[in-house]
Length: 323
Image (cartoon, rainbow, N blue to C red; front, side, top):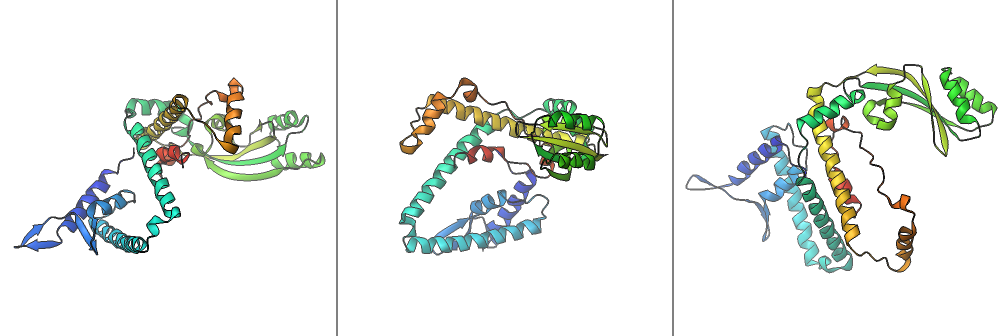
């Protein structure tokens, strides 16, 4: 479960103090949790805090936080006005609205349950974060930014071996392109600059091993890629900067795995019967070979550094499949 940063709580506290001092009696402040009344309906400070907790208030000054609170309040007032008119027009009783409200309720309940699973997990320790830091030098102490060129072509007989020979000889992209053209093989080419964390871990080790100007060949059943490292720049990240982000990354990863395990267990312990046209789905799952129903190989997310800019909500990703 995500928690608002300490600064957010401080800012919300400041906002609550500002809003609670709206009225006076005998020159004494009268605290109130009501920020405004729209007709007979009340808008509470708690509602404002809920909206602010989902906003980026980190680093905001007290004056900026107060302004944000006022802006949120005005939006909540507009929302309540629209809600009042919708109820007056009996729009809350239409089949579409009832269905949407029920869907929202289901989503909130499922999300809350999965967030509880995450919140009950032990937090990663500094030792675990340090171990991850030490085991992935290519992401941190030896981090580089890679300028990569690539040519992608469909698999044809003998092409993989030929391209590997050209990679061993450090052939240029132009030479590779001319060779493919001479064989009437269609291909796509491109180039991009990628920091280490934007390259899948299983590929990063291979790319990291390349020196500038060297190439490697990657093949799948459908295509073959000639990848050349045009250049690279060293961009290390120290442990002081990385460790807090690694802890968050490991926490998100742990939550994702726990949610997946819980859903797998719930499916195994619950009778699920597909009906109508969806019966084929159940039949296909029942008749699938064991290898197809085994738990897939864990694909470890590769974004500890990207969390420096934006921590992704893996809990929300876990719930997304329920929508």
